[in-house]
Length: 210
Image (cartoon, rainbow, N blue to C red; front, top):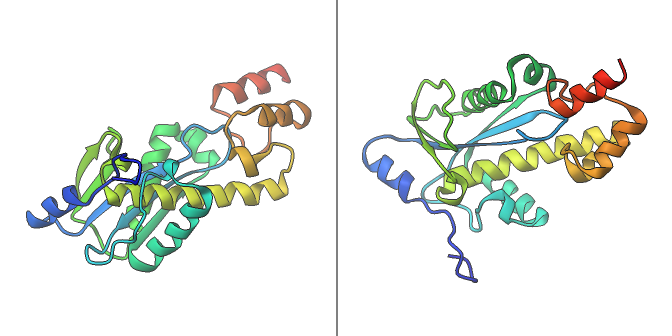
């Protein structure tokens, strides 16, 4: 529980699986399924049961400063794998399959192969280990919450760097979501190579100017 009585993720699900011999356990989460631009990023995290960083929570419930602090601590104490899938593959595969590909890449980039993967949501990518999906997993599992932080901070940094090259869309603030500033940038500067052309708002703009 937090100081205001709100529930926070725990390690009980992982502990039960480890007791059953399914070790190591990784948590998997993604960032960037909904934005109109930029990649989708997934992370896989295997926490050290004896050295779990303090303050891990659903990334959306942490301030940007706190997210980065915990991001750094997770990197120092845990096995971390990151998978990044860009807009060309998102447009080719669709966002769901691109997300699954990012998850497979994240697991493949772990130093240690997991015996069990806990995945936020309901969808299962094709992995070579056992899998368990958890609805609102980033609020229930510390491993998934840690993965949510890694994925979110990694993707935010990518979008902030892209904003330096493409300053018209406000990506450093909106991270590619369809905000008013982003729409204004599209109206004045058109569609960039980092926009997801398979997404309906971008398709509509391209059709309008074709």
